[in-house]
Length: 156
Length: 141
Image (cartoon, rainbow over all chains, first blue to last red; front, top):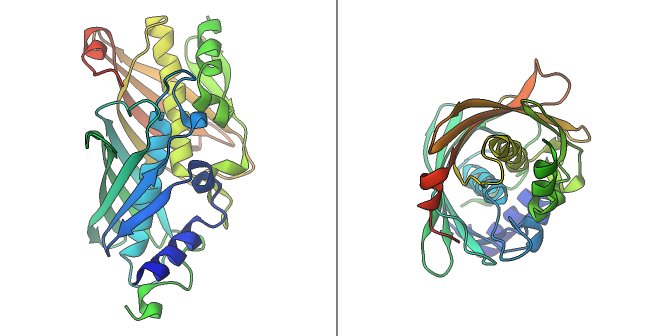
């Protein structure tokens, strides 16, 4: 999948997803089983008005989105997906007023379940802020978000 | 009892963005979060984004922690969230926290989210907070 196709898939993934628009989560790069995204600092997501940092809740939302997108990317056929479990260790607070980077990797799929690990890293010091593990159900009820835009149809 | 908790929510831009409202805090913290378009996770199903649900669960747990520690803020160490059924859009989410254990350095708090009935939860979280000396050990921002 070339960069343009990837960007289009990400647009489709985010289309109409209010939470993505609210976060302004940016896709930076990806492979078949990993993605890198950036979550910009916005004051509305801060822990405090003065010297606030990104709240653990918005980091959780970014992790959930990055994990979901990497599961989507790892599928050969269109499938709806749903988060079953998400476990997050908050190791360090995000630096005040700074963007962060989110990296997710789909490391295993067994039957209807995909297993993902992900981290949130600071942009400057390369400090690990969060470590997360997620389990996603593939083929969950409901329409998929990547309809008509999968590897089999793109011949990649 | 609820005044410090209301202040915590009023001082948090994140909580304001989500519109979470404190319902009660005696002894369990209960909150109500009205639906907003920027919560959408799946536009076709009109479902809440799982990360937004996680954020609401975490805020409810943080409020419960404040009922134990007074004005001492407790950093969140870990969250383990189970998504039990879709959290439907255009409906409010209710959350209720349960104190599992209050130690000198660790607080363990469970939080459950539901829409139609607490007997049908949509998500549940087990949260671990640091307090006291353990909280001080965490590097400031």
